[in-house]
Image (cartoon, rainbow, N blue to C red; front, side, top):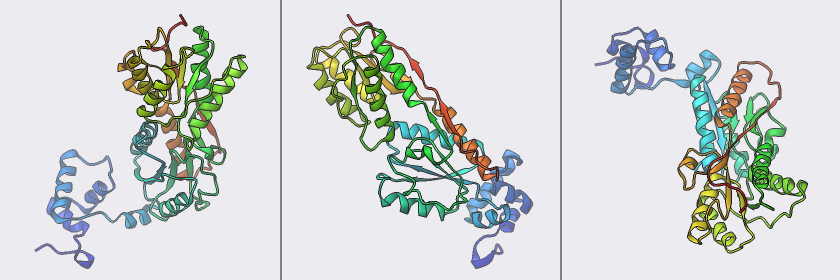
Length: 337
């Protein structure tokens, strides 16, 4: 039979023998190195599976001095904006040759975050990306002082290097677009109260209207779901004064457009609608959705490359990188008739 490593577990040399390669080749495959021929890699992976061998990550990390793993913290990954950002971080981490350890904390402004971060920082991670931590403050994010951190969207941008979208500029573009089309004012369907970006979008909408000398209507509460947009749409459709609506995200806008349609209010000839995020599906709504597209890929690449620099021992420069979103004008907005 096969000779066994410690505690009867298959060793690297067992895998090497079965695959007919050197232990160094097995080590390269285990570390995910590019410098192995595809057919050799295939043979080694088959041997690993056959023997039930799993690489000892802790031993590799000791030799290398790093785990090659990034922790990612988010709030509710089923929310589309968070899912897209998390996917962007994942893609950027993979490109930088790092694995990802994902933790979700639904109520970040509570002790849940403290516990989750404690668990994460005592697992094998080299650095942390905070995708979304709601309104949590620095006191909840208790980390070892040496742990590099990058933040994408939360109140923590004041404390850690961050890469985020210029929400304020994006909302101004959306509201200004509607005012320039001749609408007297713009109604707003909000995101959830526990989201920092929803609060920024609401405050900026109101401020942009005030600065233009327009009436600020009562905002309609919502969350990030299309169903909330639909409910808001039924309310707003009943008011003939409503001719323009800015929604805190694209899904709210899609739900709202359906409600308007069902109530006989045509988009855009009766009511113009703008979303926020720039989801690909917005191009296929009816009518195609005018929206503010967030530069997710650029943000995620910047957050991860800043983190990798810090993990490589370069002092983080404490920068706050802000990426300007684009206003994508489609057929859901038109002149006030």
